[in-house]
Image (cartoon, rainbow, N blue to C red; front, side, top):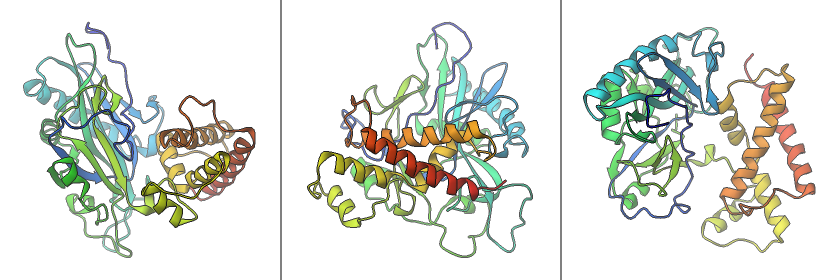
Length: 357
């Protein structure tokens, strides 16, 4: 964004790490908030005085893209006026000089296993594993503002964002607890999802409806360098997931436990990379990658190829994030690249066969 009143450029939400070890300093942050991690697809709406545009994780949505059925379910027509009201409320409160606001959240729902809750035809769940609603829902979790004369977007403080979003009619992330980082890290990550109850629905029938995990964030915007960059500022935020939703699954749990404690078996460098690479090729990671682009038609060869490439890139990025690969390294060896390609193709093919048509 420039310091003029030019149109606002879209920016994606900062990537949420699984730990704080890569952050320079968190000592100055005195208050943290725990919220439920929703198992869905990242989605955002950006509004100014003339338009409301929508985006998925990987970029803005063209007018003819029905990302997870949000247009055919009329969610765009519900979100746009709420976003306009959000801009008015932000101008009346936390950011009087706001040119635009962007509300980030998750699309979720689409199926709900309960004999007394009617199903919605022609609608498939955004993600499997946690049940939220038979309808497609949008749950906000953060708000950024672009202000006149500012060089970059900034995030609102959590309480300001939640107050304005809920007053505008949005369902917004609710605090499970707040306190120091140490206290928030003690909050359980295994609990029943709170979302169905917030929507006035009963508990799903069948197996326990465990939440995906939690998000721990600073109550106020962090200073630059403290966390993920995005929307021009910094947001100290990270996620903790239960094992069922971990994007790395180890064939040998003892290795995972030893690694967490700083130990581990002594392996040659290539063996270590291979071990971690195979652990990172999971349905959970593929689901996360797919959620960024939307459902893929198995007959669309170009889209299938793009999904393969994005999945492989995500695995390599995870190895770099975990320090298994040097950040400056060009990539995997030729042998490991070939094995990654084979394993990813096998998993993607199985995944696509099981997706709703």
